[in-house]
Length: 301
Image (cartoon, rainbow, N blue to C red; front, side):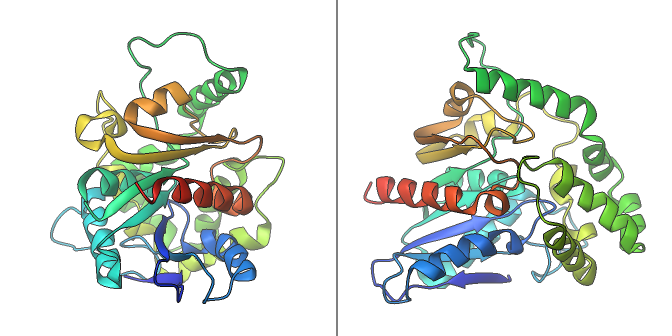
């Protein structure tokens, strides 16, 4: 397992694992790590900050070729990484996109994971007793989610139903890979704060040089066809531990608070006025502040 990290020299430092998604990588969290590095010295840093490359992504090992590899497999490996780093007594996980899916599994199934903070809920079914008492921001978010479900998910069906075909195409043509991934970095952030072209090129180049694409779309196969009850709303993925959520309004599939709180023991909620799918890239300061506030609130619990 590959990871980048800022380790503290403080004995009581709190470990936090940050999990990226697709088409991201550990690069997403470098701006956030820089904020902590600029503010603290190793002797004063209150946290151990660990950013793994998900299994199959970039510099982490390839996936087994003789069997399916799923999100629970990734969660098992990431938990073992944190245990091996000496954090078996407790750590917090933060995740978006695929990282939110794996982070939810870590919180639901592994004792070493003491709390979960997410900034992506995925597709959720409306609660059966849901009312229309939603804020204007939440109503607009549901419209965005409906639009995305209709017009923005063609990539998902390719990944889920023809992974080998799309992998061969994109692994043999760097321009095609740039178009496929670059479109996500263009369409999914908040349009008021676009991801810089240089950053997009860095992400795509990393995928190209490490042949990440064909190794990184396993999570799409396991969720097709979509189950009647989304994974986050299934009983075995309910987060009984302290659960925090940061709501960024330009997320591709925003979920109202009343829906999210049905999926875990929600003790922290922060709604922002800007930001989209790549929160760590778009709003590193806001996400860092949320994480610090959440961890300080729940750690002693």
